[in-house]
Length: 179
Image (cartoon, rainbow, N blue to C red; front, side):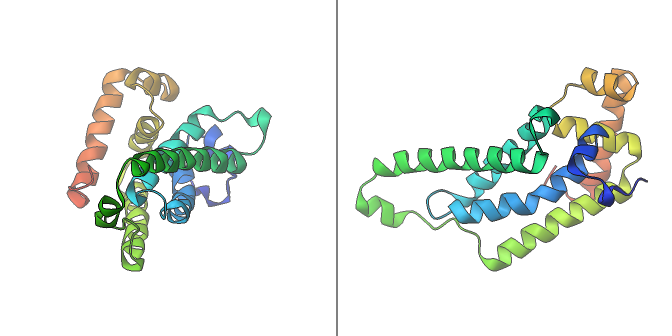
């Protein structure tokens, strides 16, 4: 198995090591979500931030600069949009209704558990999946169709479908609530 820890972000993209790249930026997504959580739902911010990160991977153009900056801008912009939507929704609520809304920011314990869960899932991906299964899962994370994944790794659609099914089954044994 390749040790991607010494690869730059750009090299990870070139080598389709998307899982490794995403794992590098998950803590940033959580951190930015905490920053904006006073104005919007934390879980919604994390979800939107992860979607923005995945979009950044697929839309990144190396000719326009480094990935780190591009990803940070994509994530921040998406979270700012989420905050704007939340503020528009909140402006329609009365003061009494606002007081009834729960605080969605995670507790310190929830943050630690979330980070540990992400790290454990990444470790499982590295340990449990074959290189082909990992490449197929990376393609799914990037939003590619099975045909596009097959073309990228030089196989047929059925092989991709089988590899993804095997990967999900392996991961489901450990994380049935996530998959």
